[in-house]
Image (tube, rainbow, N blue to C red; front, side):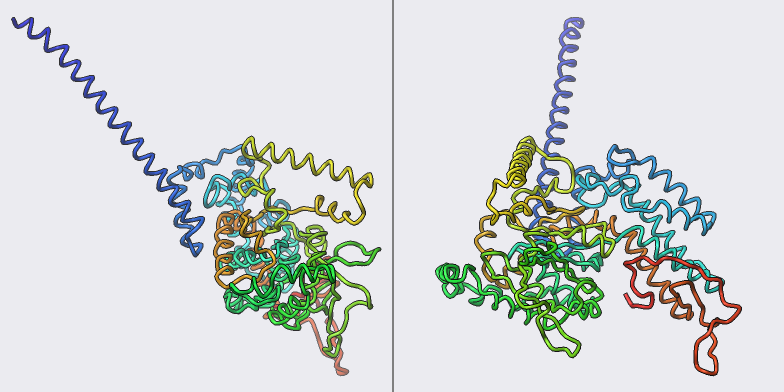
Length: 578
C-alpha cells in the first residue's frame, strides 16, 4: 500500500514542480513584457514632450537623459570601442595630454596642441556618434575635449617672466585659434518660414553658442540683420515677437489681412509690373526694425559679423556678392536685406543704399545697377566665408521651401540614407539632378531658366544642419503672408526644440574654439594691462619706449629682440574688446 502511495505521490510532486516552474516562468515573462511595454510607453511620452512641449533646454535635457537611460544608451557611452571613430588614437592622445599636465611641461603642451589640434581629430566629430543619443556621445570624446580645454586654461594662466613670454603666449593662442578655424551660423532663405531662424538663434544664444559670424540669404538675411544689430545685453529682447514690425508683405497682420491683401491684388500687380509684391512695404518694414545702420556700424555695436548674399542684374557680374563690414562697410543693412529678398517674380530688383562721409544716404552704385535674391545663387556662401573669415564649421538653419522636402532630419549630416524607400528616393533625386545638369551643359534648356542650374548645384547643408520647419501644407500656404504674434511664438519654440536635438554635437564642435577665443581675449587684456605692444615687425614693451625732447617715440637700446610673426588675416586688432 505504501509503495502504491509513493508511486502516485512522486509523479504528482514532479508534475506540481513543473507546473509551478511554468507558472513562475510565465509570470516572469509577463512582468518583463509589461515592464518593456511600460518603458516603451514612457519613452514615447518623453519623446513627444521633447518634440512638442518643452520650453527650455534645461527641461529638454532632463527628459533626454531619462530617455537615454531607458534605451540603455548610457552603457554605449561608457564603452570606448566603436568603428565610427579612431578610439585607440583618441585614447593615446588622452594619455599623452595627461602626462604633459602631470609633468607641467608647458613647452610640450604648446607643441602638442599646435601640431595636432583640429576639430575632427580621430573622427570625434562624426555625426553618426551623436545619432543614437538624445544627449552627449562617447564619454572618451567628452573627456578628451575636457582635457584639451583644461590644458588651454593652464597655458593661459601660466606665469610669464617678461614681455617676450607674454607676446609668445599671445602668438600661440592667436595662431592656434586661426589653425583651428571658426564657426558660422548660416540662415537660409524661406519667405515667412524664416521666422523659425529666430528659434534656432535663441536656443544657441541661451547656451552661449551663438557664433560671432552670421550669414543670411533672403528671409535669412532679415533675421541675421536683426540679430547682428544688438549686443549681448540687448539680445534677450530680440526674441520678443511684440517688438517686431510684422508688415513685411503689406496689408497688415491678423485674420482680416487675407481680405485686404487678396490674391486678386497680387495677380493684378503681377500683370501690371511682373511682380506679386510691393518692395516698398518690405523696405519700410526692414527700416523700421533695423534703422539706418551700416554693416560697419552694426559690427562695432554688436561685435558680430553680419553677412548678406545678393545677386547683381549686370550681365558680366562676378556672380553673387557677399556683403559684410569688410567688403561693403558703408552699405545700409536694411537695403542689403531687402535686395537679398527680391525673388524674381515676387519683388522687383532694387538698388543698394549707403552712407557717405557726412552721414547722408546715397545710392551705393552707379545708376542702373540693381540687385536681387541671393538665395537663388548662393543660399549658403560657404566658400566666401571661408576665404574672408577662416570659417570651417557650419551650423545651417535650413527652411527653404524647395529644399526641405528632399532632406531627412534623421540622416541629414551622415552618409546613411535610412530605409529602402529613403535610398530609392535619394537615388531618383540624384539621377534626375544629373540628367537636368546634362541638359544645361548641352544648352537644351532656355536661357531664362538658366538660374535653375544654380539651384541644383549649390550646397544646402553644412556640417551641422537644423530643419526647424516641417514639410506641411499650412507652411506653404502662408509663405507670402505676414506672420502673426502667435505664429512667431510657435516658430520660436519649435525652432528652439529642433536646435536642442543638435546641441550636443554643436557644443563638442565649438568648445575648444570658444576656449581658444576666451584665452586669446584674456591674453589681450593682460597685454593692455601690462602695456605690452605688438608691432608689425616685432614686439615692444612699454618700458622699452623713451620719449625724446622733440616728443618723438624712440626704441631704447636694451629693447627686446624682435619676434617676427605673420598675423592671421582674420584676427582683429589685439586691443579690441570682443
